[in-house]
Image 1 (cartoon, rainbow, N blue to C red):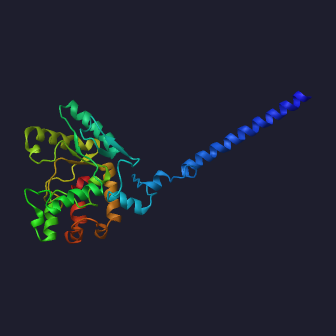
Image 2 (image 1 turned 135 degrees about the vertical axis):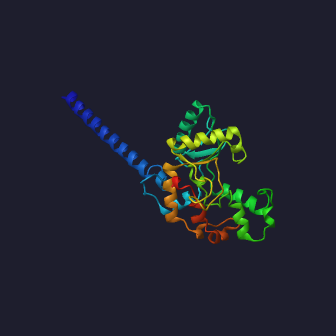
Image 3 (image 1 turned 60 degrees about the vertical axis):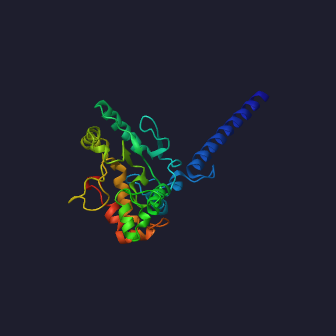
Length: 279
């Protein structure tokens, strides 16, 4: 009789134990998903995570993402690029972009073409550093000290030949890369021409498009031609559309010369002044 009672008691204890374990697992799972256990918010809440067809994000966070106001080194959808993709020690890209570039790089290698990333994601602060160095004359632009240009609109226009205002660069998005060299002279050499011709012929196969083609009837406004600049359009086209919906000239601030943005109409003329094939 005592053995039977002990057996029943043991079964009850075992049953309660299973129920308790089950309840704990549910709490951990749900709490981890919503941040209740760890005390942290979810990835979607912490970061402006933009994916095609996914609109489940806070508008302020999306704006911050599009304007480069985040740290790519801590963003969960960014990945550090290293060898063999680049010799840079601190280059970050959206994981999708880096994966696509890796495939393109391997294909190019089989054809005797070497591709290497020389510039990747640049957030707002990095772009601000580039812009203000040129604005102040600390960094010469085509051999000129632009601090001597007293017309602020003209000074900004000169910088905009090749450099974006902070908050307007496609390099903010983790989708755009500069390949091999940012010197126009490189792409006029036999090697540079060979690299460019391969990219022009095969880049689209891997999702890459050259946004800054020669200016002309199809691209009358925007930056000068940049044969080195290539964009991963499966993502960048989505971001460009979001940019047109959310960003205004009044949002462009906190850098020298920001007041010239509206006069120069940088959003329609530069952000949208791209190769139509890249939209």
